[in-house]
Image 1 (cartoon, rainbow, N blue to C red):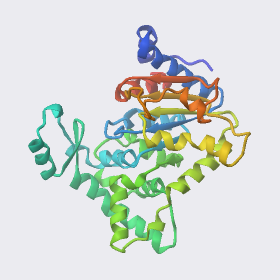
Image 2: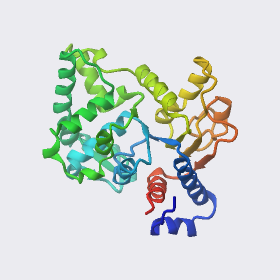
Image 3: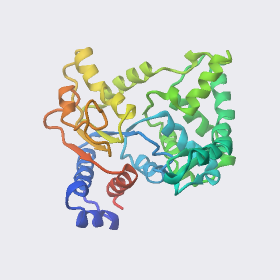
Amino acid sequence: MTTTKGEISKFIEKYYLHFNAAALVDAAKGYEEQLNSGAKMLVSLAGAMSTAELGKIFAEMIRQDKVQIVSCTGANLEEDIMNLVAHSHYKRVPNYRDLTPQDEWNLLEKGLNRVTDTCIPEEEAFRQIQEHIVKIWKDAEAKGERYLPHEYMYKLLLSGVLEEYYEIDIKDSWMYAAAEKNLPIVCPGWEDSTMGNIFASYVLKGELKASTMKSGIEYMTFLADWYTDHSENGIGFFQIGGGIAGDFPICVVPMLYQDMERTETPFWSYFCQISDSTTSYGSYSGAVPNEKITWGKLDINTPKFIIESDATIVAPLIFAYLLDM
């Protein structure tokens, strides 16, 4: 298939020639080769990529079928929706490095929870969603139904109850794009997110049962079935950041191969990580890709890339290349 690359793609091909810049281009081309060969791609989102508004370009990746499954933290799952309904109430703090403890306390008292240079407004973001998601949780429980965390979020978005609150163009929400496609999502450790904490509070108050929310084990078994059903032509792994969003899903391969003794299970067919974590003792985020060979996650010949840089700079450029921008 012949495609015409746009100006951004041409720029990085011309000027990104060495070191991390070259790794960026190599990784982008490797990702493209995977899709052209019929392989599927998992993208994992760690950190605060939704608050960094990655949705502006990631939503288009989803719409154009450049990603087939997502693994993300609970924060990324909810913060894209928070930005959708409360964008005008966010406060940017460009001098965040200079803040004193008193400055931070002042932000708290104003209901502003800081993520680096951006403050999420508690009342307009968290509580706005809480009112509607709690009703969806309780309705499901009343019917004896159970769902995964992202499935409740999809119900929230597709119900239309938030439409009156939209403050950005809906096309810039990656969660809405995912909901429209019913894109598979794995969200390990969801309980530590704001919505996870809120759900737990209703369990503590006796207003909801913990079993109404499907568990992390059920996410893993869901992923195992999905991987088994879709790995015929390979599945690549594109990891933004580190942590549980990456470590949880990548483990599905050794689990199937070793614990389930399904020795025909293929390794991940591509691996790329964008991270500024330095290689250190025992660090998952800082481990070089070759270490994953010893854990039965990657093959000797799996194309492997590591880009040691800021994901908020690198990921949009790679996505732009894949979108022929």
